[in-house]
Length: 407
Image (cartoon, rainbow, N blue to C red; front, side, top):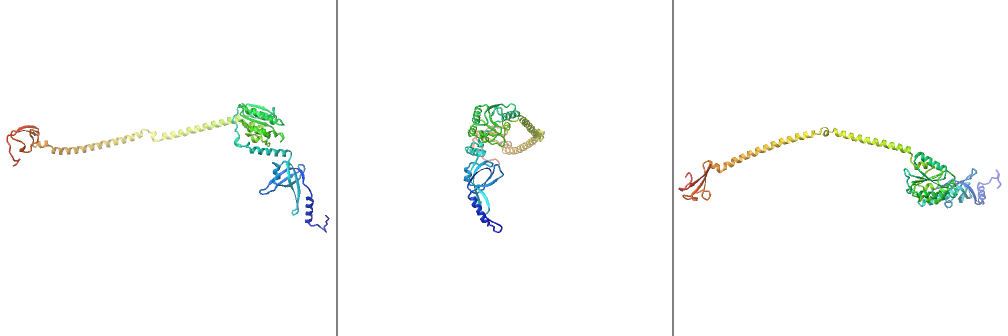
């Protein structure tokens, strides 16, 4: 394409030619590092950023979800092999790449495999939090799976004995890397789990590369740890290392030293806690005693307890007043009834036959004891009985005359 300031070419012709050149390029396989994965909500396109592993070159790549899902789990920072097809947009003059195949390699491939295994085991429930066993407060015996004479063994034992000198370890040595590591660790784990004296098991190893720590993401070991009846503590590598064993173990320690601090208490801290507990208990008891003493003082200050007999004096006065009122009432009632009786006696005496007799009258009875009220009731020579005021008389009728007194 010839051009000059006098005979410039249209921009559209140039962009069209560029597109034609790029379209004639075929797909090419490249090795790069996956820097970024951007999944935009509602979009059917996934945006990737790939960077050369040696040179400072990076490009933007688009891919479909099907392509990304077919590659398995991808993580940022992984090394990948991708098939790219360059494409050119005339309207914007932008060069982009489309990826229709991508595969992790090296550590990236291993990480993808581990991620896939992790998801499978998680779907089976091996990492469920509710299945984790609590650690004993003070284990009788601590099982330790590590390499013989390793720095990890030294870190666990020394730090645990600094915290609790009486701690007892039962080591079960095994290779902690290499092809035979998984088998030996599983065998040691089963021996310790079958021992009823072992209360907790620590699996400890120092740091290492991803390949060195692969045995601790082995599926057989993960299932063996899940089947343990004894609580298991994972202490593999450093803080940044995260084998699958960390997820299935009942507790994870970032380092072997942290595992030692996790399984046994600190004797100094426990002594301090006991002292604080005793102090709080003493303060609580003294507080209770003080409150009860104040309560008793309040009770003693009440009038009923300050002078217990004062109430009796009040009631004695009340009883005395009631007794006097009762005596006066009884006396008044007696005098009232005496007056009534006197009146009745006077009335009875006024109506009494004796009073009549005392006035000179007498009661006359015939021989049969019947009262004689008329001369017709007797005959001459009848014997009569006369009652007078001071006795009785036996009389004989000599003469009968009719007519009452005063006639």
